[in-house]
Length: 183
Image (cartoon, rainbow, N blue to C red; front, side):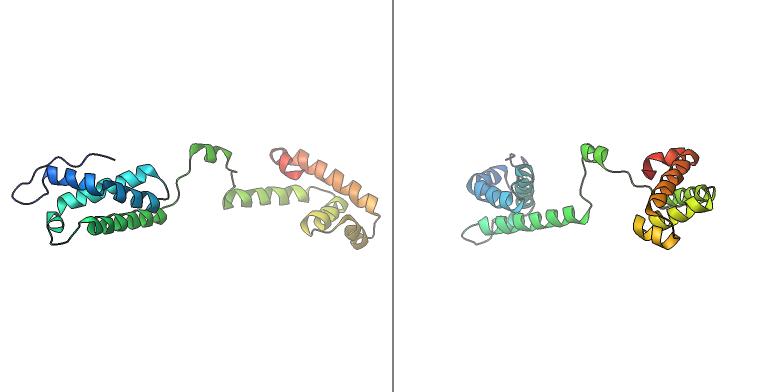
C-alpha cells in the first residue's frame, strides 16, 4: 500500500498527516482486503482504490470527525463506490488487446475489397467455355454435389469433376493473386 498524503491541516480544510497515518494503520488492511475482492484479485488496482479512498478521507475531514464509533464503514463505503465506478469505466470502453493477439489476428477484407474481388472473379468466369462455366455455377455457386450437378447438366459425374478441375485451373491462370483462395 502507498503512504498517506503528507499535507497538514490548513485552516481546517484537510486532515492532518498523523490522523491519516493512524487511519491507514487501523483500517488499511480491511479496506485493502475488500478492494482486492472487488477488483477480482488485481493487487495493483486494489492498491489504487485504497489510495484513492484515503485521498477522499484527506479531502473530507468532516466525515472523519463525525460522532460515529468508527470511521471504517465510511471508508469501506467510499472504497466500494470507487470500485464500482472503476468497473463501470472499464466496461464502458473496449477491452485492451496486446500486440501478440493482434499479430495472430486474421485479417478480414473490407466490403470494398470483397466487392472488387467479386467483380474480378465474375470477369474471369466469363472467359471460361460455356461447359466449364456451367459446372462451376452448379458446384461452386449453387453448392450442388458432383452427382447433383451431373444430373442437372445431363453429363456423367466424371465429366463434372474433370470440367471443374480444368475450369479452376483456367481461373488460377487468369486470377494469379487469388490462386490460394480458389483451392
